[in-house]
Length: 320
Length: 122
Image (cartoon, rainbow over all chains, first blue to last red; front, side, top):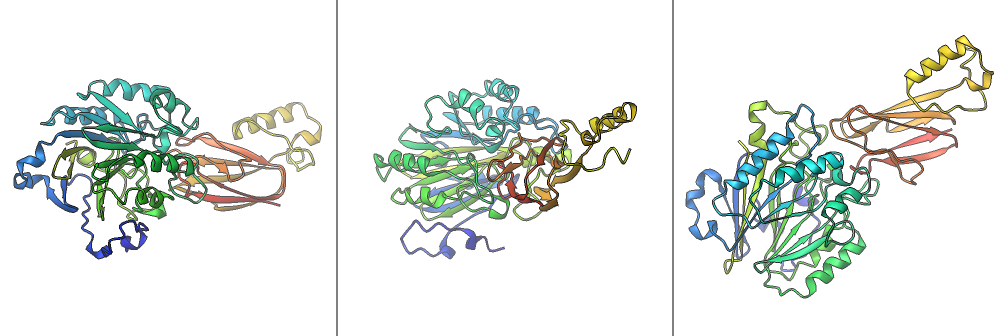
């Protein structure tokens, strides 16, 4: 499969050939640390962390990403999504540097039910983070067009829940690409949100590191399974002028990374159940693995920003 | 029994599934109703492996179509023109719609919009 051919972004305008893009793919469970410096990304296996410069491990801002907790899911692929979310929280609480906040990149619940939202809110109270930020997944807007989600997480957001904030000089933007999806299409941001996004970035200096997070990948991971966003190239065109852009997504229940020009794309593992690698199964449904292996394919992601190095270090660790 | 279930001009909508239909049959047997009350044409669509099967369902006007989700992931059944729209169907949950007018009805899963199919009503 020529995945390169599926990638439609051409936002660099710097003549860099696709073949020149450094990319790394890390399937869930392997555990990879990726560090970007001056537009070059290096990846380390977690077992080789000793080779890292100490500075990369102690940045001025660190945060964690969890995704796809699918509270309410109870099928054989993971009959205990509460247990694995608890394990993810323990992982967060055991991180050496205290994370500033937590990002949840959607599919908080399996069926948008109030009790499912309640469960996650209750469990996440144990996470030792000051704040949490959310974007919805399609499962969070499945029964009421996102009403329940917005009642809980919509404060200070616009539209279907998009929002932005600044932390330690890094600008964060949460985008929503799971509502008003069209037949035959992919994830969609929509014109209203795109206009807001363009406007939101206007006042930011090009040297400001940008982190964009959304549920469905903002790059074409595997359009055949809907793993991409219709109008993401428009959104990414607004990011051309920035020196450091990191895009964090969920949805595909496996870690994957790619660097294209100034943008590092990263998808996080689920805390609930794994999904197959693109095209490696008949459908993207939950993947059943032996019980003793389950936690090795679920995980949390921690991200570390070091000022002056323009580096955002993204570390995936599994729950086992 | 078969006579009572023959197709007539007036369609009756059954709210429940086959269980209720069976119940109604017994009722008809016990106390015969006017013939036009007893009629039902049904058809099934299975949702499995992130696809609708059959992808193009041919039916006669007045047929009640029932979708059943056999996946471990919820899906919806939503007409492109919003003529019918299910809630999110969890595993083994069903949604039914009776097609009273001829035409082609494209539909999709609003959670996984790559899942598309159609019902052709003659």
